[in-house]
Picture 1 (cartoon, rainbow, N blue to C red):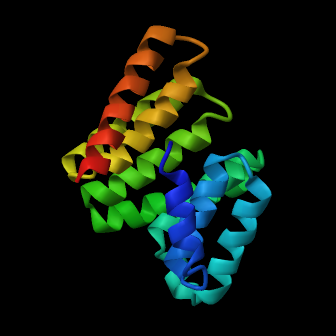
Picture 2 (cartoon, rainbow, N blue to C red; picture 1 turned 120 degrees about the vertical axis):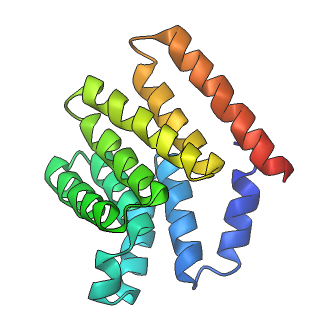
Length: 171
């Protein structure tokens, strides 16, 4: 996306901050620079107390994505299950969306149909939580999953996600 350079620049200006480290790690992951994403992710986690790490939904979600990119199904599953427990305990659409997103990303390693259902659930949960950016991210993950099997559906998801990102940018 064209604003990635701007986001990176903003985050680099305060890279010492945990939120900026998470943002930079997410950008690196999105650019398939898993090594840099892992470095930033671990740097951030080292600064968090153990009890905070266990309840860090956004960090757990990114940890799942990194583990999947590294093809570490065991770690991805463990982190996804921890996020799922948080979501069930909190019972909020936002956390349920994060948990379903993570479950969908993990399922891409083994079961495309399960991944599709979980990612669709994530899109719906984020929508009901009024989180259009996260819903668009889940749509992008779903589009990537469907590119090989259902090109027309994937194209429609890409278009919706692009429109959602554009609307988010306009705010």
